[in-house]
Length: 115
Image (tube, rainbow, N blue to C red):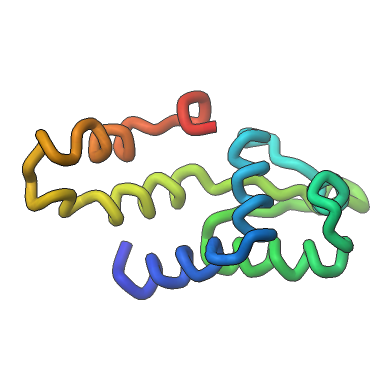
């Protein structure tokens, strides 16, 4: 991951509705959720939710696929791990006593432990 990609991902998350949707999809796991169900759960109009989900997808934080008439979204766990690793790779200039387990968490995060 490079600085530009990290900035794009962080900018996508820097909105309350998008952050809430992303966190919901992390909890939902790899099977994801339908866009309508996300909008309903967050009390956001479906058209506005579609805009937010598209922003997260362009930032590589989500993936989507069609299931009949529904569009399903799921968190991109690999890209999420890359972002966390990028943010923590220089953690405290290599002083593990300051960072604790933060850097190892980023590299060991799985769907089960991160969601």
